Length: 266
Image (cartoon, rainbow, N blue to C red; front, side, top):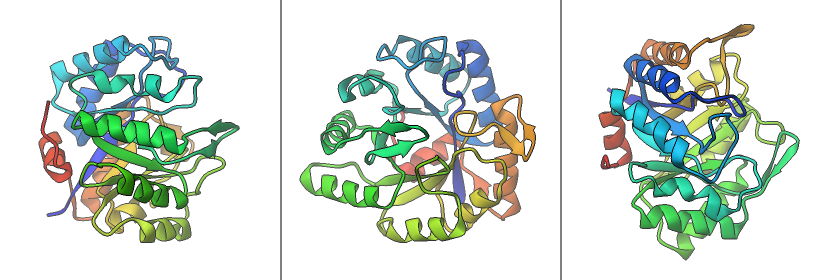
């Protein structure tokens, strides 16, 4: 039976982060069906930082409770340069990391990811044996990654996270998902993030079209339904898992996610 990986991005940008409370929520989320946890490098007040110490503390608390796949972010709109954004890769337990596929308008901000930035990050993850999850906000970014893959070694299998819903980016419509999906390389894995989601129809459509990964959590949306927000991330994961099972599929465990993504736990 086909298994779908639920990736959890549990921290809303700019909100305070308590490592123990976060770890307990993530552990319950894994029990509910999540397999991967995506964290940015933040201070306890929620602001982005090049100092990885608190991110490491958060992941260590999480790993005391569960064997979730560890995914670090190299993104986020900030004043950090690409070398600083890649500092989280030095945490020895990182198994996967975001790799941004190009520049875009992200809300009212311009999210800059030059070709030099892409090449730097792609090299950094490759040298550490970390699987990049390429975040793409428009179809041209898929072509960007094809160019980078021709220029330097790149991890296999390629994994794309198709991001929809941000102001300035692709919007979560059937037509846009269909167009986007048609340009994903045939031998690549792909998944979706629906930023600002307050319904479940788009995720259902992506799963039906073959998504290997769906990303949910407070970083992208706190909604359980239109007008109803979750208090904890695990509530969102429970609903995502129920959706997957209602379609006759199963959620992947962390170990099954590692098999699907060809990861070796560190």
